[in-house]
Image 1 (spheres, rainbow, N blue to C red):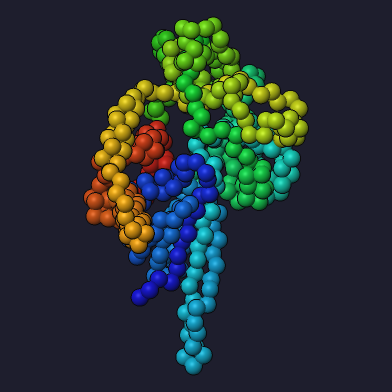
Image 2 (image 1 turned 90 degrees about the horizontal axis):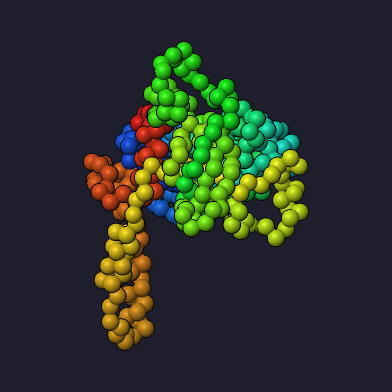
Length: 395
């Protein structure tokens, strides 16, 4: 039998699409989720999955929507019909539009869309009209204030956005991406001071052990008894400027329970960055609240270890050398044949690579490939610190 339903997963994003990487990881870990897929093809902005019936396609899309923020729409098309036997051939299309926001994105929450977001059944509350940071993307998008005030409570600096509210509010017009993870810069922490100990989410208030306060407040995993986020006043310096000049930056961050003096942290250097639409000052004044002040630095993530990319550079140079060949004059017909063959070979290689990642190939069914890209390795690290998401991927 031919396919009767297709699930089209799309994430329209110019840079790295981490949502598609999350789908690849989820399918590689869950064999039951991909058992009904009879065929799949990678496309420009996502994947196409083919099924024998609409119920299997809807079950597959509902599984993906548990850990990826997406909008699901179902359409049907009449292919043929037989009036004598009262039968019809109907093919269904399930379109899954993923929210183009990814973890570590710096986003503007436009204040002009406050009424539209609230009317859509959700909103960001006090984060409307401010600069926000995407901390996590599951079935909903988790935001945190990128420039919180020192007297705020950490709970008031966080909000969740459902995909239906995102699309009804206007999508990218309401939540434009200012900077992505490729613009992250390394900073060195010089001083950390919690804004107020009572503002942190204390889970071990009855603990009376006489340990060092700075060491006991550091988050070391879900079992550490310390909440992950807390507001803190942090002084940092660029790693490139450390020891060269005395330029430092003061900022309020949500990483208070994660940072110590001497840590290396990734952040956005807004003081030296050229923001999109920066030439139009009126555009920013209409997006932000009157009380908002643009920070010089936004801290995003603590860097656990510095990994050298020298081996990657050497490997890319070696592959480039092996691919270079001596030029030889050929006819136009042979060139066209070579181009067609090369495109077909590249398409098959990309299909096999994606199939192995998702577990559809024999290699992917037994285990993950040995050479995992950097994005997949980063997603695996996030799963270690998020036990709830890891359990959902295995179900």
